[in-house]
Image 1 (tube, rainbow, N blue to C red):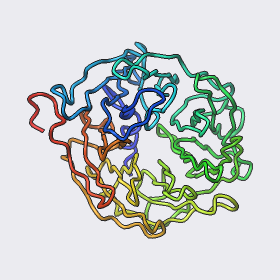
Image 2 (image 1 turned 90 degrees about the horizontal axis):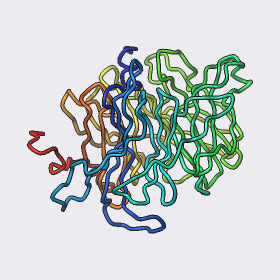
Image 3 (image 1 turned 90 degrees about the vertical axis):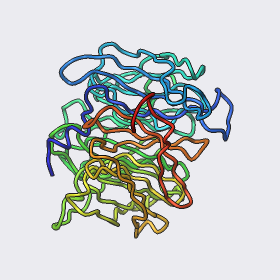
Image 4 (image 1 turned 60 degrees about the vertical axis):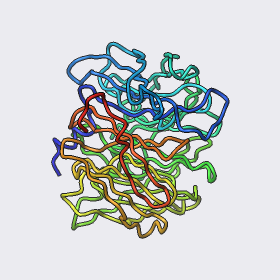
Length: 385
């Protein structure tokens, strides 16, 4: 593993683009129509200099004469450091949560007038903890954020989970520190919700060169009580256990699938009693490195793999035995990182992780076959690709 490459992928630099998601409906309404707008959370700040954080509004109507063009932009901060994660889709009610990881600030974006979003406020900081990373919604509309760091008092300085009201006010916070893993550096990173069984599953990965615990944690959703910490089992023959990165609820809503950045896949089961973590697949290394932010659609997982310059489709109908069934290559200047899904169509939006140019593409993902194809109409005027 090349540490420098890992840093670049997760410490996104100049003009980084994080996909905030499609917006299809007015507040309080639902629709099966394709989304009219695409929000991009973008900016020009780096760890060495401040820059502008912004929400770019892109015309996502394929029938529009301005399809694929930026039609509006909201300046969120002029002293940003690294616009990073957002919620994976816009909420049916209330504001969208986004963060600037480098500046340790998170914001609320009001999409009530979807073509003209507004800044609705800033998320409260967490006493005795800092640096939010990822967000997910509770059934009551509250937002849970993963927090990477504690207050430095407890050895390991583990992060935790924080619950926020829709207005950004803190409701509660729980630490990831576990007496069974005394001194472990647990950097709470990604999360997925399993409301049917009152559980949240989180991963642990660093955003820099720090060596941290390779763990997966199970929480009670209703009160953010930490139920179990699971160490990702080491395998002597490869490094696929390192950097547990993203986690997704399986279609049953009762188990979850974790992917490591080193392209190992782990099925998390028995979540209601004694959770278990089973390695179910590992992709060949070193050609597969950089398994990042996927989606699950039907019985398929669409996985961006940064340094393989490709998107792999895994059939996860038998989660104990995933099978790769399709692969779509990009050119070597594009480093796939994030996938978000249009709730009203078969479209997905993907972006580069920061090694290549700030670049966004739209594809069509067939949830019955697992095939991904690119939307050739979605391009800048005069672009050759």
